[in-house]
Image 1 (tube, one colour):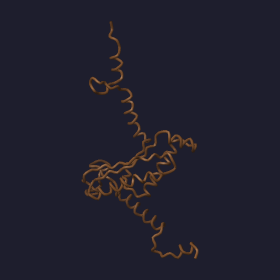
Image 2: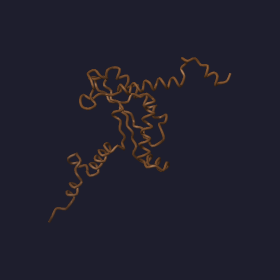
Image 3: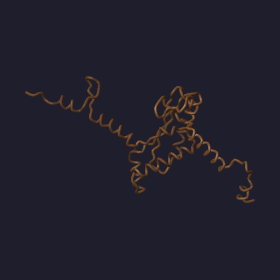
Image 4: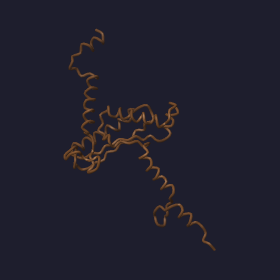
Length: 197
């Protein structure tokens, strides 16, 4: 009997990869529609829409994963290897009544993104945005319990404007051992000038 006939004659209730994919997608769609993994804020735009909604009032818990680096064409096996453990941890605590914030972001600055852009002949902003969307799709298919409303990429201007600001604060400062804190560089320059005669 050929393999094709065996597949065609399989009982309708048989658990196949096609059926598994359909079941997974149906649950993932429901989780997204109902905001199952959303972690509400006490107030503001991300507050719970009604009392008792998804761990409202539970003890807060923050679970953070290492952000994937979307410089390639997709996730590799090392990404979910780490994410599955933190996902189990977050789900367990959510079931205990904790208000678990489990976000996902994307760290896309640096040479790998630029190298990938050189290899593909496309601007890094274009390849990074496409890769972030590909990673989001792949992470969703894994069924991981992330609050998708809290996702960001380090290439988002609203994110990196603050990292650049922090860098400038550090760059323009020096550590004064006498008072044990950072001071502006102009204060160092002024203190190193000889006193007028």
